[in-house]
Length: 404
Image (cartoon, rainbow, N blue to C red; front, side, top):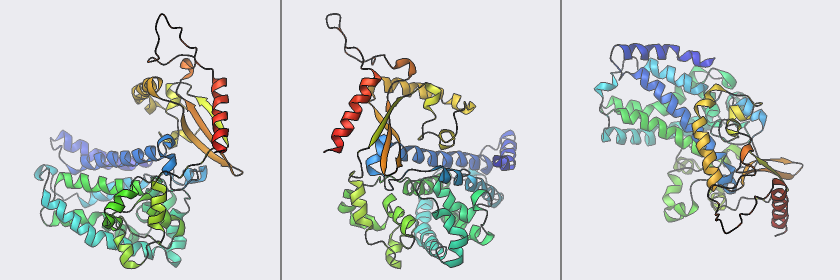
């Protein structure tokens, strides 16, 4: 229901389109909302593809339903920022009057970000970790035990949103934290160097870096920081941010740890832990394995790394999933041809690690060979191994791995 708040922006965009002014800000605000939502969704999907990321996960615990419920309305801050942007840009010139690209504007935005946004966020963040402000505001964000891209808006929502779980925010917090993100854009436009690409580029890079930090997967290799040690102070990592999320008294920066260096708030084990996790050794042999196969194409879109709002609810056929059916069908063909058994999900119970592995076959393919299986008239084709035999083989492999 909160999307009804976009009504005025949609109406304004429709009027501009009808009048032939397709370059108005309203349409671009709506496009930015869609692209920003996509950026968070893509980072969420990547971080939860355990078959790709399990060895480089920073926090090994899984996300429970309490955290999912708390972050359910994660995109409230996107709605509010679009509405604030529409009010602030109401008197701004049409994008038709702006160049598509202007290098000077990018340089100005970068300088303002480093000189204004980064220190402003650092100071504000440290203030929100003290006394009353932490107990009544920022503690909401730190109550999420496992960092996720959807946790980023919860952190921002403490400052930006009046709806959902962040209903404690005040106008002062909105102004301070809105200034953090708006300062580089306002600086470039004030100097006459604004451009369309600057608006899209800065906002999407900002969101992507924050989503990367909360992805709970170490994506920056340690050898990169070993080759260029100065980068340690110019860009943070998921491991760096997770230490702040856990310890709460260190690593306060927005993106650049150099401000933690100046403020003497860098965790002394940040680089060692980063090297350990990025090496890919953060893995564990499961104690129990449940082997499963996909039922059909629609059910394949209910896996945890696609849409959390879908996978966390009882099975229901959502209309919007039909729009993605051709993509899911193509993935099914690729899995049939090339995929192997892979890890889908896990949970810990009484100290035991339980994992769900998926056989890359759908219900109607369980006893079907791969389309690329070698066969010839003179050579009898092997019968596909039954699921029961596969399950025994997997258990034996797990047991042997546990004794190594």
